Length: 485
Ligand SMILES: [Zn+2]
Image (cartoon, rainbow, N blue to C red; front, side):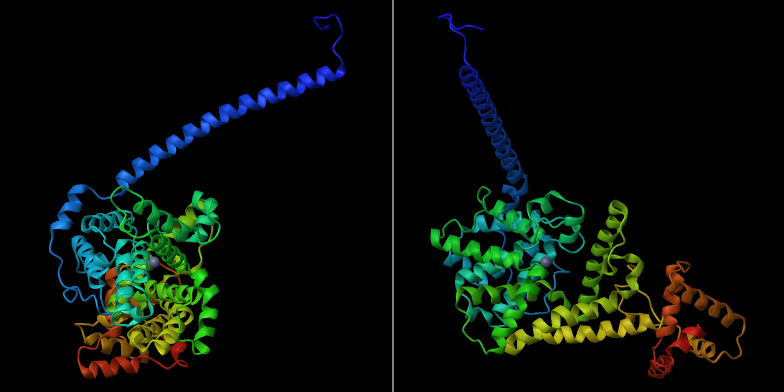
């Protein structure tokens, strides 16, 4: 090929032309990329607008809550560590939340427009999924324990008003959009969330959702804060939510215990304050363990139900054997696992906290009390005297009180293996089936199991109780009992 002037193109001309062509190609490619990036950003903006519209509370609901009177803190039992939401309506859960903000005087101190606070609370509630345990009710209970720790537990003396605001917000938001599955599950299923965050996966998401709600129209309860306070409170909220990951707790607890051992009393440096807030968040997050036994028992069922559902998913979706805690086939181990949970996480934390801050002792005492109950139940399961399932776990074993004290006689006879008449023989064979159920069989109907249990725990009169107690063998003779039944 020749140039216009008749001379031939040199190799260098060809190289320059090739380079120019590549340059043009890159230019065109970049323009196209830029255009599609702009479109994707616009799409994301539309999706976010859409999401935040549907994720936030409606004006009607907000106006209704805004115009309602807010009952007293006492009427909701907010100052007590025994607070529970079971009897509260959904509307009451929102009113109780507003009451906590009022008792801490946060609305006035931070100039939170009342309507914005109401809308924000309703939006937070709306962004909890109806999973069995990690739902809005759990968030409310955690926030209430924080409130009780600050007020009744006198921890507010260590906190600034801004930190109190941040801690309450963090408690209410700390499990936002929880799906009933844990961080390990996100990793195993390679969920998009696990790709976004490789550690504290769900906790990062809870915080992201918290930010999403605050950034939605008329939901920003921090809108009248100075730039500096805004930055500070968001930092408190972020670090408090992230610290609800138990993996983070285990990483930080030694440092905290060290400080306590050294007799630390000044918690005002940024690092120490963050550590203290993190420990308080964990203390609140697991505080169902310190509630009165009937409440703890009921909540443990909810947790177990949610865990078992994850276990089922792991079996179905991943074809994997779930860990004991999530394996419904091993539900009888629940009491023993509760004892482990209490010993490893709850008691050491409550012990060190209540030794240092004595006003939060009720959390420690309540946990000690429940430990006794779980231990007792675990021993009974071990002896084959009861079982755990979703139908019966909400009835503490003490409630299996019989209306048929005669069954006691039957049990004694069975143990003595003497004079087994026809009726007793029938009952005895039922017990045999019960024993096989304990080995994994599924032969008993609920009614039959309930009847056997009632007969084993019958103690309608003091004499019956004495007889019943006499039936429970010491550790050595337990096997003998198992063999007998
Ligand atoms: Zn939680």
